[in-house]
Structures are given as C-alpha cells and as structure tokens.
Image (cartoon, rainbow, N blue to C red):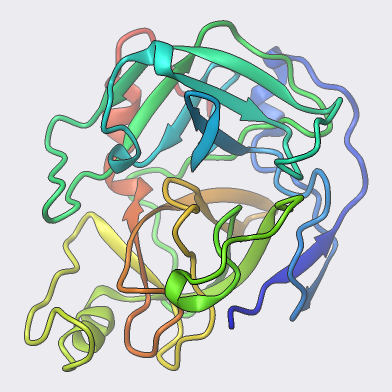
Length: 281
C-alpha cells in the first residue's frame, strides 16, 4: 500500500499573470503530516489534469499563464484538438468552481524522445488562451540547468493515480488528488538498485543523465500509473521547484525499484528555446 501525505496552507489572493515573477512556487504549505492520503484543495496549484477526448490520462505542471509541461509519453496522438487541460482541479468526478479548462493549441514533444528508453521524456503544451492566476491556479518554479539538489532531499509527488501497488485498484470516486513524500536518490544508487535481479532490468543500468530517481530502497511510496507527466516538487529557498516529471517505473512501490523522473534542469535550455515561449524568472 502506498502511504500518501497531506499539507495545509492559507489562501492566496487573486493574482494577475503579470505577477508571475513573485508567485511561482508558492503553495504556502505550513505543515506536513506523513501517512495521510488526500491532498487538500489548492495545496498544489500548478497541478494540471491532461484530458484526451475528455478523459484524464496524465498529470502536468503549469509553468506560465499559457504553458504546461508534462511527459512526452502522454501524447501518442499529437492532434491538439483531441486534448484539453484542466487546472485548479481537486476531485476529478466533482465539478469545481475553482477549475479552469482550456483547449490546446500546440503540443511540443522533445525531438529526442525515445519510447523505448524514455530518454527526453518531456513535452510542452500550449493553452489556447492565457489564464488568470487564482488561489487555486499558480505556476511552479523551474530550476536552472546548474541547480543541484542533494540526494536524500525530501520532495513531493502529486496526481490522481492508483493508491494501491500493482495497479490493481484505481483511485475510487470522487478521485481526490493524492500526494506522497519521496526521497531523492542519486543515479548511481538508483542504477545499483535496478541492477538487482527483481522484476526486469537485471544487470542493466537504465538511469541516464537526464533522469533522476525518487523513493525508498524498501519501496512503499511511489508515483503510480495515472500520475505520468505529473510534478515532483522540492521546497528550496522558500519556493517550490519542479525538479522532476513522472516518467516510468517497474510496477509501483516495489523495493529496489524507485520511481524514475525526467530531470527538469536538464531541459531548462530546451524549454526556453521553444517558439513564442519565454521563462520569467
């Protein structure tokens, strides 16, 4: 069983898009209690729900008033008209006045993405129109390419994925946003774990430079299917930074098989280079 955790924080005032420089990464979390399951409404205001023909398929993270970053493997089809993005969501099966849903005008999948190795598993999604920031909809901060966060740092993963390992039980209605605290793990340790003869990757070292791992050697806490593309965030210098994007793993919550994430700092230059896109930092 996966153990999720929960946060509480005060409300934020209504904010305009021009205030992005001072608003990224501010979920205003004030306390953490490990062992819960549900997040609280508005705790992770950058969390996006990516919908394919109306159904939730992946998570994502709001990074400006018009751009969401997610995983490339979420987009088997690249026709923007098949997708929509919902922000400010908390319970997927309950319509919320705090939510904002937008059509998609463009999907940019990294040109080096490999569905076999999950290299460059990152994509940008452009909303049809810029949104307005609110208490429940705010961007997460992006790390610089040179930013380093130490192994062992406690960070958080969120999404609407399964709550039991082995993928045998989906999150029941109303499908409330979940959160779990995980520990960052360096690539060498992660590769050492994956080389152990348990469920695949025996003798291999699949973790590349553009990936990072998070979880625990003994397993138990992880991101599951349904959380693909969603955020791994760490609290640094009083702000929340998007450190990883949920990419792949073996089963869920297994010992010696921590979750694997796209390392966002490896793609900071790529994000900035996209047409009509500018990072405000």
